[in-house]
Image (cartoon, rainbow, N blue to C red; front, top):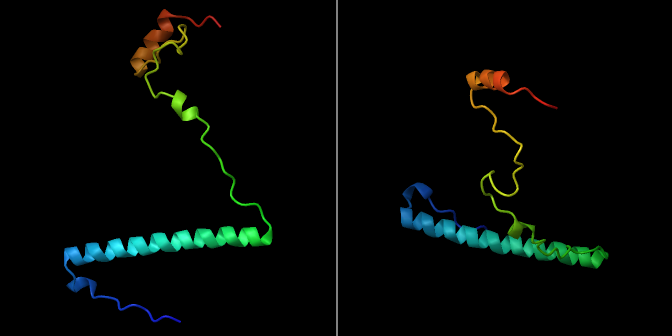
Length: 99
């Protein structure tokens, strides 16, 4: 088995040395995650299990637009809700509900 790498004294390291260390650790972590994913796929293949499905984007994201509420999609009979309790009281007095 491989020996563990020497752990540097982090308190004595400069900011540049710490940045270099973090970048190296992130790269090593990405490689290990890729290796684990490849091994999991190989294990599933050897067991005869189905692999990950190849899902294509649905395209629904293209049609949505987070625009405002007033546009062709808004119903004309909808009223704006009152912002305060005083406005709510005056709204009840002026317009009875016809449902």
